[in-house]
Image 1 (cartoon, rainbow, N blue to C red):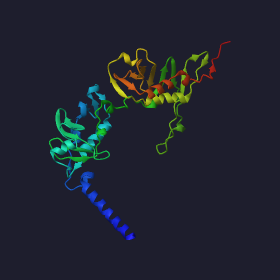
Image 2: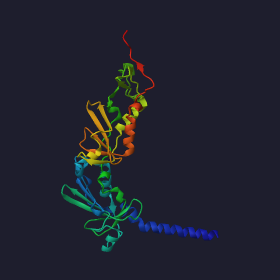
Image 3: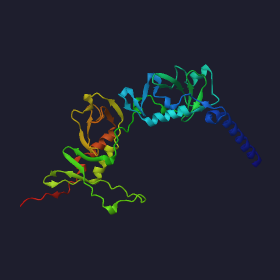
Image 4: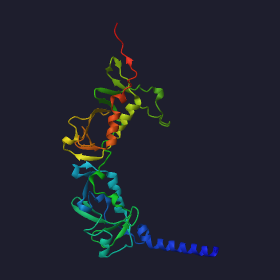
Length: 338
């Protein structure tokens, strides 16, 4: 019995080696002798990409300087990291033995000129450099691919969800982000919150270059104005939470540059004026549609209107509530003249 088990183990090992050997060209094509580039295009040549999918879905990206933008959204910034990651994968991929080369295989693997999951056209201005057809998947995070003008079909580590054909998936969701420490003042419904002046550092407190730097002290916030004869007292954690939400503000999708009555911005739910260290002031307007739970954000330094996820909008509304920001249980009475 042990001898039989031993031989079965040897047989299984041989089968595994044979399976890996047969599939090696598709698993690691760049390691094979004679491996050639998938496309003969340098990444720095490409400044225009057209992504097409089923049912005429299409996204175009163009490069201006070092930044990728979406022309259909008035050149709104695209997620350049995502674009460059896809381009690196395509331009640096190597091929060796094709999986198939027949006309029937093109349709079967969905890499035909007319039947495909994705058609990626790489161009320099209006000059096409290469076209890549992305088809069905042979496994996790992989797709069959074919270069336009060539019958050879390969398997590439590129999934269709890596190259979506919806504009919102390519928008740079960090466009509205700020440095939290860049915020110096907020004004919400008559309540003004300012950073308190920090004491100047004494000569003895200056850090030497070869010494570890101390942790940055979080700013101290002060409320300006009086309420019922008392100085307003802030809740530090609540102000910190509000500045964090504003600094890390992300949107769901860009709505365009045209104002719609459905945005609910004629009577916004929330208006915040935010001052920065640079001296400029940003004004945030948050509206809600009367027909549904859609929230729309407009910021004074951007021409676009943004859809905010409901959870993010409600979190911002709650954080900016006067009751959340002020400690109403206490306060310092103002001195009266005798």
